[in-house]
Image (cartoon, rainbow, N blue to C red; front, side, top):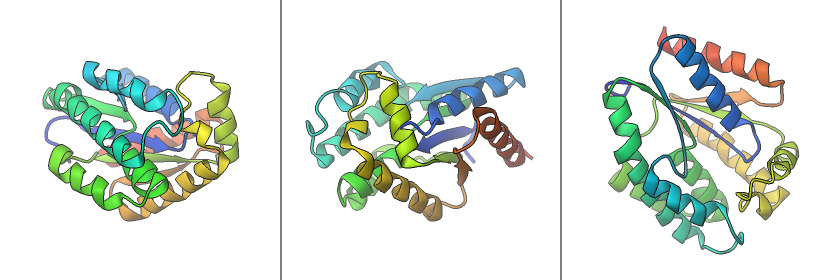
Length: 208
């Protein structure tokens, strides 16, 4: 467990509902009187938000997987230094929509066979994993339709298509097996309220 506050992350394929569930959990924690910071990746600090635009906008093939790993790691380091660590030191619960597991899956396993590079950089530059990670699992085709329907302009990864989303899902299922002590698999193929209730119950069990 992290000294100070607790560090909780949400992971999953694009359109899985993880951002919605991160917001809902943050609101639940605040209602319970628990000081909470909601943040996201890539982003979460001024410098990291600038890098975010390079990563989530534009042509799907604008960067190689290796370049993406370096950009994500740079953004994550700034996010960690300027946002996450100060909040944890102040005793806040930090809830992040994505963290290092996204890079492990997207670039380390699906975009390229570069997990060793991802893990080495993580150990050298980041050196921290969450206390608890919710992996929202859902049907890749449904998730892709949801993601593209948002028309957010940040759909670079959705534009890789359905096969990419299917491989991402497999990568996340493998991640849960790799980190069973902190990763909790959540069925996202249910109504939003049911998913939120499941997550709130899991957080309560982790606190108990």
